[in-house]
Length: 470
Image 1 (cartoon, rainbow, N blue to C red):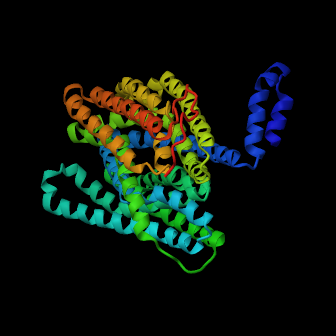
Image 2: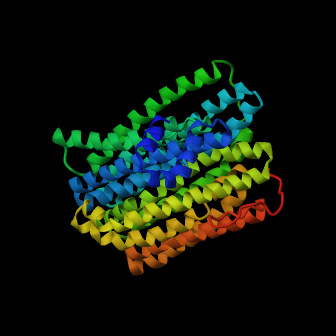
């Protein structure tokens, strides 16, 4: 508040008058105590964290690419995407379902069930990820000769990292379900990437080679430090919030709801990362490095969407519990607008500086500029409908989400298989953008048909009917 008041005093009268509506709105967001203002503050906090996260990730990727060169950097990028993808899938949907269930159990005063839920999501993630990692080691033992030699050691290190990736994801969901945005997002998006870079630089200073193996060792150490620190902090905070006491488990109900979400989130995460995976399968590591640098640069736009998504879930869930469809429609439309306009502004700025930004990775990486432009078209299409998948999931339409994402993933993979062998990196970018456009259209249709809400940044979202939220 003091910052806003000081800025208003220092601004010229003309500019002050123009900015008055914006400052009044910002003041309301920062001072009001209603649910909408709290959701807006969470979105603003998530947005700020995403800005710093994007900056840290971008700088760290530039330094890593400069240190390793495009070939070794491409190996690291491919393996890191695989481990993050597998770790996320190993949560079995509990990192998302915890948001819904915690709200429900807390509203009913079922604190024993809340405590049981907080423990269960951690155990599920750890056991599942450890099992997947074990299967991965078995695969390397039996079929290791079919994998390129330069991938073997980085992939083995990735398997050791996987349980902590999964645990970190469910801790993120647990913190978000309580509205603790900083606790949820800062470990994964601020601390871990900073530590990866710090540990990499330390290893090189101590004499380690500038290779993908060293980078994966740094990533493994950073992930363990970050996740275990977050586990300790969140455990203490949850104990203060809910107190010690008995735990009650409703595993059947939790699994029945979470497994469809596992498919939704899994397919969605595959959609987000399948391009790098398929490029890594079809093309050599140096091409993976160029594509990954272009994607990492234009992904600056997506932190807007992820910030909105992080804040929207708890608010959607709360409105669903009240059964207020007009409020749900209004909030959904607001989320779509908040997603689109900042995405457009950030994307145009990123494209304007695209060649300069890519040149920071190294001279070879400027070949990825047109990939950025193609990917931006897809990102912008997705931002037009905002976090539609979150809305459907919180409305109990997670099975429909599974079908939508399965159709989108199938179309995207088909496009990858057809376009990458023919057009190389351009084909990968075209397939990715087309997949995002297909996803946006399907989400818009699904939300309109099931909830009666016109989910589009330029439309009136008012519900045309009053469908019941399950």
